[in-house]
Length: 493
Ligand SMILES: Cc1cc2nc3c(=O)[nH]c(=O)nc-3n(C[C@H](O)[C@H](O)[C@H](O)COP(=O)(O)OP(=O)(O)OC[C@H]3O[C@@H](n4cnc5c(N)ncnc54)[C@H](O)[C@@H]3O)c2cc1C
Image 1 (cartoon, helix red, strand yellow):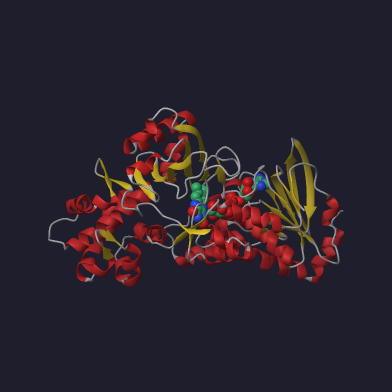
Image 2 (cartoon, rainbow, N blue to C red):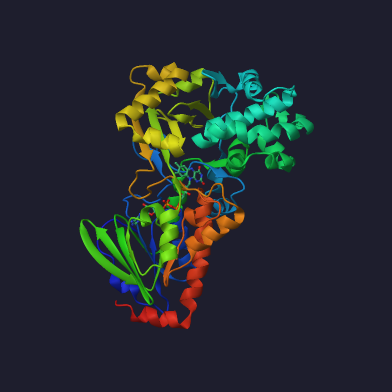
C-alpha cells in the first residue's frame, strides 16, 4: 500500500482476516521495515506508524538540491562485509550491483591525520607516529615495527574513538609492547602502514594485552581500519526505499506514538497526528522506538524490570555536518576518497568517491560520543563556522568565494525521534551483554521489542535487522497460540 502521510488509521485493520491478526509496528527505521517485510511474508497484515515525515530513521541520505544531487550520508554510511544480514538484504532487495568498497578514514595515502599539533599526510605519517609512541613508550629500545604498529593503533584510536578511550590509550596499550616486541609483525606492515586487523586476527595475545576500554572498542576499530567495508552507491537509503516498496500494508508517517498501555489481551497505542490525539488497539505490537525516546513516553502495564532497562540503556551521541561544495577542491590536494582525521570539533572528514553534476558533497565533520555533544551544543551557524575553519586548515580551497553552496547537519543526540546516536554496550562482559539484551527484548504481553538497541552488538544496521528477525519469530509464535487468535477477534474493530 505504501506511505500514507496523512489520514487516520483504519481501526478495521485490527480485525483478524482469515484468522490472522494485524501486527502494528512502531517506527519505520531498518528494524521496523525489516520486521514488517518479514511479517508480511509470513502472511500477517502489518501497519507501520512513524513519527517523522521521512522513513529510515538513522539511515538518512540527504541529496543536496533534490533527488540525484550530490549526496551526504547523515546516518549510517558503510556496511562491514562480515555483516551478513545486511549483505543478505542488500542482495535480496536487488541492490547487489550498487555495492561498492567504502574507503574509510586514513585509508588513502593523501588523507590527513594530526600528530601533535601538525597535520600530516598518511603517506608521511610513519616518522611522526613513531616519535609520538617513543615519547610514551618509556625506556628500553623497541623495534621499529613495534613502534609503527602501536603508532598506527594510536592514530586509529585518535581518529575514531571517543574521548575517554583517547585519554586512556597510553595506559590501555602499555601491555602490548611485550607481545608486540616478540611477535613477527613484519607481514602486517605494508610500506609504512600497519594492517592492524590482520595482526590482531593472527595474534590473539595482542588483543589480550590491551587494557579493558581499548579491548572493548577493538572490534569497531579494526572494522574501520580493515579493507572490508562496503557502501551503496547512490545512497544507503536505497535499502529503506526498497523495503518500503515491498511492503503491502500502510506506513503512516507523521504518526507519533506518545503512550502505550499494555493489557493482558491487547496493546493500546496513544497517537498524535496533525495535532489530534487518538488511540488504537492491536493484539500485537512491535516497538522499534529507541529506548532513549521510549523512556519519555507514558507507559502503563509494563513491569518494573522492563522500565528499568528502558530507562538505563546508555546511548552515545553522533553529530554530522555535510557541505555542498561548488567543486571537489580536495582533488587538487591529491585526495579522491577515504577520510581525514582532522580531530578538533570536526573529528573525521570523508571525501566522496563520486563527483556528480551539481557540485560535490563533503562529509566535513563526523563526531561521536562527547565530541558529538561538543559539536552539537554549538548553534547551527557556530557549528558550521567551526567545521569550515577546521577543514579549511587542511584544504584552503574551501575558502574560495562561493565554494560552500549549502550545508546540513544532524545532531542525533538532540533529534526528537532518536535522542541519541546509537546504544552502547561497552565495558561489559559477553554474559552481561546477553543478559541485558534478554531484558531489553523480553515482551510485555503482546508488546514486542526490536531495534539496534536490542542486539548484543548494537550500533549497526545489522543489529537492527538481527533484532527484527528475532522479534518476528517471537511474534509468530505468540500469534499462533490458539488463545491469541481469539483475543484478536475480541479487539474492537
Ligand atoms: C551518525 C550515525 C552513523 C552510523 N553509521 C553506521 C554505519 O556506517 N553502518 C551501520 O551499519 N550502522 C550505522 N549506524 C547505526 C544504524 O544507523 C542504526 O543502528 C540503525 O539504522 C538503527 O535502526 P533502528 O530501526 O533500530 O532505529 P531507527 O533507525 O532509529 O528507527 C526508529 C524509528 O522510530 C521512529 N520513532 C521514534 N520515536 C517514535 C515515536 N514516538 N512514534 C513513532 N515513531 C517513532 C523514528 O523516527 C525512526 O524512524 C549509524 C548511526 C548513526 C546515528
